[in-house]
Amino acid sequence: MEGGTNRPILKPWPLGWKAKIGILMPSHDTGYASYEYQTLCPEGVVVLETRVMGGKLTMEHLSRMRADAVYAAEVLAVAGVDAMSYIGTAASFIWGVEGDKELIREIKEKTGIKATTGATAVSEALKVLGIKKMILYAPTIEEITAKSITYLEDLGFIVADHQSLGLENLIDIFRISPLETYGGIMKLYNRCPDVDGILLSGGCLRTLEIIDMLEKDTGLPMVLTTPANVWKMLQLAGVKEPVYGFGKLLEMPR
Image (tube, rainbow, N blue to C red; front, side, top):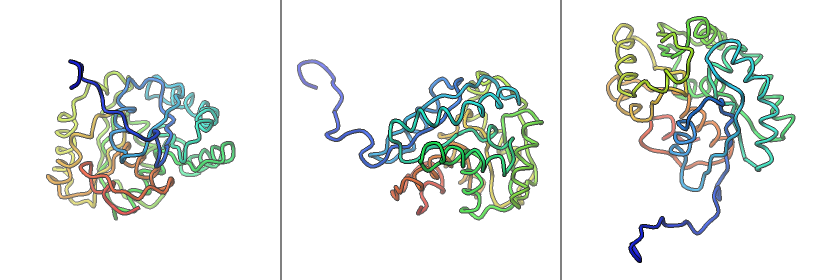
């Protein structure tokens, strides 16, 4: 401390000197996404964001998000990001495998930037971790969770059991503590332990504090929306550095 003030130490390099990754995030996010995505990035990687119109986890609101996605990607591309993601899992699961691919194609075509979605990042993470048969935990209503299961099954995965919290309002999901989520996942695991891994679908659930704990206590690899998106964008941007403390996926070579 100098002169009686506590000043932050400024870095002698520009933000994003290693890579810039971009997220197309729902407009209802109140700061968790910004915080969690930057927390998961290695030194030298910066997260830039543009919002798409959200509101609730309903088909109507998720459809509005999809309508905004390509324009939002064009806005984000102006900042010169190296890779970007339409980060919502439910928001991309509901369009099916081909609809999800079409959105990625549109974004790449309009921006010239490497892109992914929450659904694609999650499904590729499941493959990398060797997860074929899983349990699925999601905050969504059953209608949307069912579409998520269909997406996964169309790619050859097996969803042995699942739990839908049945929530539509994002503010209700943000209020769920990480330890409450831990308890819900452990209950699901205890009734269906014969699986290869666990998928927690929903970036609006606070999960960073419990990833390592869940992997240790179940002995299974975890795939979660936010780490999967970061993993895939770092891969697309060519960033090889592992990230420790937030599950096996981010520690693996990419």
